[in-house]
Image (cartoon, rainbow, N blue to C red):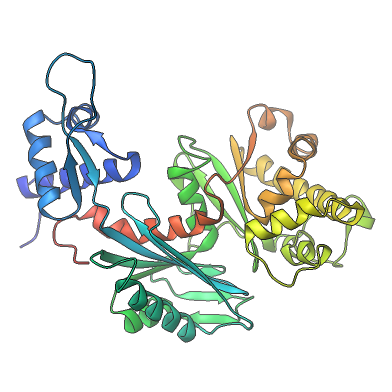
Length: 390
């Protein structure tokens, strides 16, 4: 039967989606609060909440004690048993996490690799990890779908990885490979696009409508954009590739890669080299840089900050965001001297565009890409809570 948007069934499904999305994004909410937020009447909210509980998507619990007069309203929360699997394949590791609809991360694992993994190997790693978790951390959990945050160009229409240059992947039908290996639905997107979504919904960009986000990872620098509260993906889904831009470098002594792009000059690999590490996750690299606060480390951080500032100033002049968020090793570069970075950005930005500009590091830390990938995996469930199988 074709559902018409004006039918009772269509309205009912949209209201279920609205309620589930609210408790997913905001956390546990009382029925009274849900009534106020949705504009629905109390009996409708109670009925919708009961249906979400019956579907296994929500739980209801007694309200917290209060001094208010009258009977307090029951609290509705996302079910802790509903999870998505999030995956971030990189040059040096494949990181996998189970992210709950309630925001918890009950399982997380970084699987270090000593060579570039192929798409098929990545799918097999994911399948083996899920099988192992089903007998332990995820016993009894309902796995909705898999989201994969890939450092490269991902076609918006079908999740085809057109080019992940550092992974040497080209025209890879990654969703189909992962679905075949795991038996679960899969959605694939650019890692930085997922990162800005996570920070916008849950992190440093929560409540902010105009954001430029730059992500620094093992494969280089990617970016994501929020304009007027909405993600901007571009015609094919490839917007935000700041790392491929050629930076303006005012001091010739700062240039290390002749005619190089931004991610060759502002580089995680260079930071690892200066502290003598071959590989490291984000907290380990940040700790190593802090512990080795010698002249070589300070010089490299300062050089990368200066070049990054010019790239950010160009983005601010073009897009006029109110907030710039930096994730991954870029957060470490920024945190080494945040005032110096902001001053350098403002010095190269049109004065009016810099008046309300803030620069923040990603609040979700090393989980930001995984949370964003999980959000993409939850999208169908949130849009259509009835009839979405896990």
